[in-house]
Length: 238
Image (tube, rainbow, N blue to C red):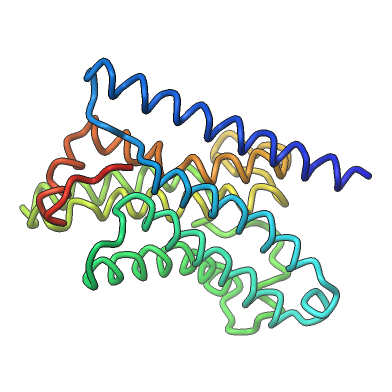
């Protein structure tokens, strides 16, 4: 019964979020106060992302997966990667073959975080990595803004090409989606302040499907969207 109520709440909140975004997009377009930050295509893609989150995390509860440490860890990591790829695809829109490279990189970044389990365990043993006494360092959410700002500063100091300006934002969206999803089991670890209670499942779904639009809007505020629009030879309309 509780599971049914959770699913109903998720569907309701997903619908409410998307309707709100449609209304915001319409209002922005009418007032011309800002360039379009949403499109029908991206909103549908976000809805698909939310549905994927609902289905994937339910499937991972099947006993055939839970009974195998390797299958459980691999499946969990693959879902992290797919969410990272899907989220970045919503941000940039896939228009040509070269865009797939960025999407794959986003998926890699969303998945590679879990390698810190093995570093902390100081072993390649999966059992050791899964039975740590505390969470590894890349699972501290404070690391995300520090890493993003550090990469952005390094790019400025070394005068890297504008074509790489997407990298800090890709790290932000890939790692944040990973942390939010982990948060439904363990909460968010915001060092040095401690950790939050486990996040509600509906919060995970809504946050994940909204994250690409939040990222896109922040990219607009910092001027990154304009640069990337030129790079992709299109107007990024997320």
